[in-house]
Image 1 (tube, rainbow, N blue to C red):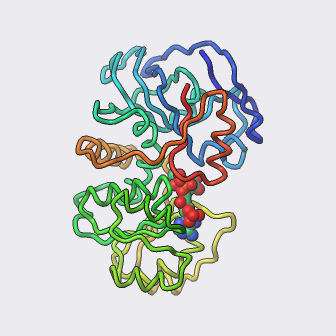
Image 2: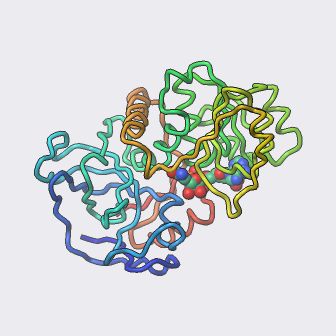
Length: 322
Ligand SMILES: NC(=O)c1ccc[n+]([C@@H]2O[C@H](COP(=O)([O-])OP(=O)(O)OC[C@H]3O[C@@H](n4cnc5c(N)ncnc54)[C@H](OP(=O)(O)O)[C@@H]3O)[C@@H](O)[C@H]2O)c1
C-alpha cells in the first residue's frame, strides 16, 4: 500500500511517502480502507517529538480517519466487511495511523458512520468531537438549558463543542478572534460569538449569562480572568490544551469561585467516559446535528504540507486523501 511514515521524530521533513506492505488485522483488529485521514494538532506534536516518543521501527501518523472495513481479524463480532466507519486514536500505541491507503487498528476504535454522514465529516470527529463531548461532561441530558462558554469556538474542538452543546439543548456563548471565525462559530450554532480581543468582551458574555455552568477551555492562562469572572459554585471548567508557558494559578481567587476545574487528555480517559462520548456523537450524527468544518484537502504525498498547515493554525479541517 501507499503510506506516509516516519522512523524518527523531527520536522515534517521526516515524513516519507513510501510503498509498504499492506498490514493484516490481528485478533480483535479490523483493517479499514481509508477514505479520508483527519489531521489534528496532536499529529504534528507527536511527530515533532514534542509529545511523542521515538517510533519503534516506524510510525504511520494521524489518529483520525474514515473509510470502509475491508478485513476483520479473529474474534471480531461487532464489525463486518463493507461497513462505513469513523476512526479515533488509530495511531495511539499502534504503528498504523490513518495516513495510508489502509489502517489496521483495534475494532473498538472504529464507530459505524451513518450513510447520511460524509467521509469528510467522519474523519473530522475522532479527536475533536470526542474531546468536546468529554469536556462537556459526556451526558447531554445534563446540559439542557445550561449556559455554556466555549473558548475558541472556531477551532476544531470548539466547533464540535458548540454543535454538541446545542444538540443537548444548552445556551452557548463562544469566543473568537476574527469576523471569519465568528461566522464559523455561528454556523456551528453559537447563540453569541464574542471577539475576545476586542474591548467589552467580558461584559457581553456576562449579559448573556452572569455565570456559566460549563466552560470548555483551550487557553486557561490567557482566559483565566474571564473564566473566573463567569464562574460560581457549580461551574465546571474543562481544560484540554496547554499553552507555551504554564500559568501561575491564583489559588485563593480560584477557591473563592467554588468552581470545579477538570483536566482532559483524550488518550487516557476511562472506557466508560469514552463510550459516553461516542454514544453522544452517534446520537448527534443520527440527528444530523454535526457538520463539516471548511475542508482543506491534501494528497497523501503532501502529508508533510498538511501537518505544517495545521501547525500554522489552519482554520477548518485539514484532510489527507490517500
Ligand atoms: N487534551 C486533549 O485530549 C486534546 C484533544 C484535542 C485537542 N487538544 C489540543 O487543543 C488545542 C486545540 O485543538 P484544535 O484541534 O481545536 O485546534 P484548532 O482547530 O487549531 O483550534 C484552536 C483554536 O483556539 C483558538 N484560541 C487560541 N487562543 C485562544 C484564546 N486565548 N481564547 C480563545 N480561543 C483561542 C484559536 O483561534 P485564535 O488563535 O484565532 O483565537 C483556534 O480557533 C491544541 O493544542 C490541541 O493539541 C487536546
